[in-house]
Each structure stands twice: as structure tokens, then as C-alpha cells.
Image 1: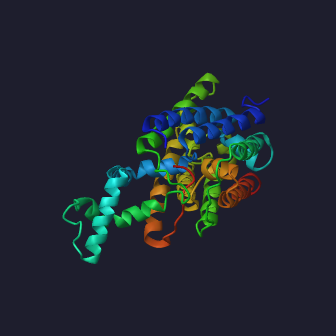
Image 2: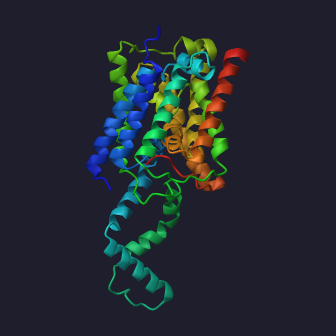
Image 3: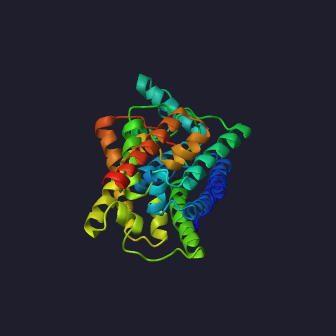
Length: 218
Length: 138
């Protein structure tokens, strides 16, 4: 008898987490996106500062008017509007475009503040720790358990190499595909987004194939 | 638009609940994960699939708009890489965190790998791929 939750409890739990997050924040849940933003925090902070500068619609309109006037060489309005935001936006255009490609195309919402994404990752750790301690499953281990030992490797050096390579593939793959099991799998499939359905089918199918290789062949 | 404090509180609650739920389902246990992927035990697969079914119904009832997503050139190769890494290391981006929280210290190596992979992807995309990859969660 497994000590883990039955399937229906797990399904309800995962669904409730996703629904609550979506309703409260107006945003989709996505752990790999949170990782990405936290890891590139310097650029994200710059973008947040730029967003704050243009949070006021009036200021944005004035800056755009100044930029237009400068572009067409009339000089009209240029003297009444500070130039710094425009120059700043020009110099950071490439960065902005790059980061904009990380954002959902169909939403007008700004990304959640950087600090909230870091809080999400830390809270996952805390929630996992509470669950492990409360269920009596918490034990400090220097390996990944009997399953990993039997199916992948029992050698500690090989284990480290496999975990690192696996982690790199996960990190690279999720960002290349634009989401992971929470973003594409739960939020995206829940909304029946074609890209999420395709991504989930492919990453799940690949994991099935590789797991069969580990189990039956290697 | 939600306030910064509301989003922070929501993310803390979400993180706690997600970590608690995923740990109790067994996603951090490599043996359980392999049993799911090899269909020896359908419990975790049904948890995931059941959650998606509930979400489809809930999002339809709540009339949440369906955000479009373009199937770009990175989706399939990215998903193949992710699926391979998930099967090898037993971790998707949230799982190594709860593995460490459950006492599996080597999962720290997986986290380092995830960090390297994410940074490598952004660098490679800016330099070579130039894909508008979109994002599921912000």
C-alpha cells in the first residue's frame, strides 16, 4: 500500500493549486518561467524599472510624442519632455525585445514582480519540507534512493553526472519549449492551448520512451 | 490588475500548496516517477490527467480566455529535451526543489543543471535561434 495520496486526491490538489493561483493573480502558473526570471534578475529588474517609469499613461504619451517629434526632426515637444526615458528605451531596445518574447502574447498584464517569483520558488521548498516532515518521509540522503540506484546508476560519480546532464536538459528544454509540466501541462492544457497540448504530449511521450529504455534495456 | 502584495501572498500560498501536494503525490520519488512513465502504476498519471480534466472544466466554467500560443520551432525539440531530462534525473523544474526539501541532497546537482540549462537556452536563443518562445506562466 502506497503511503502517497490516492490519484483523486492528487488530481484535486493540483487542480485547486492551479485554479487558485490563476484566479488570485490573473496569471498562469509556470515554475520554469519563475526560474527564468529569477535567474535573469538583473535584466528583469531593469525592465521592471522601465515599466514603472511608464506606468503613468500620460507620461508614456508624452514620451512617445517626444520620440516621434525627434524622429521626424521637427523638434516640436522635444523641449517640453525629458529625453532620458526615450534615450533609455532606445539603448535597451534589444533587451526589451528579447524579454518581451518571454511574455504571453495575448495578455496586457505586466509580469508578476520579480520578488513574487522568488517567493514562489522558496515556498515550494518550504511546502515540500513540511509535507516530507509531516508524513515522516524526510531523511537526509546522499543518493537518489533505490529506484535511481537500480534503474540509472549506483555509482556516485555517474549519478552526479547524470543528474547534472538531466538538469541541463530540463532547464534548456523547458525554456526552449516555452513551459514545463506546470505551465504547459496544467495551465496550458487546462486552457486547451494547442501549443501546450503538443508540448505536453511530446515531453510526456519522450519521458515514457526514455523510462522504458532505463527499465528494460539499460 | 492585482496589487504587488496580493500577487506576493498568492505566490507564497501557491508555492506552499504546490510543494505540499506534489510531495504527497510522490513526484519527488524517482521510483514512483519511473513506475508512472512505464505504466506499472497509473496513480500519478491519473493524478496529473485528472487535474487537467478538472482544470478544463473549471476554466470553461469560469470563462477564462484561452491565451493563444504559437507552435514555434522550439516546442517539439524543447519538449523532447525536457522529457529526456525528466526521465533521467526525475525532476521537472519544481521537482528538484522538493527532492532537496525531502532530504535528497544530490538533487542540488539537478538544480545546478537546471540553472545552467535555463541560462544556456537564453544565450543560445539570443545568439542562434531567435525564437519567440512565449511563456506559460508569469
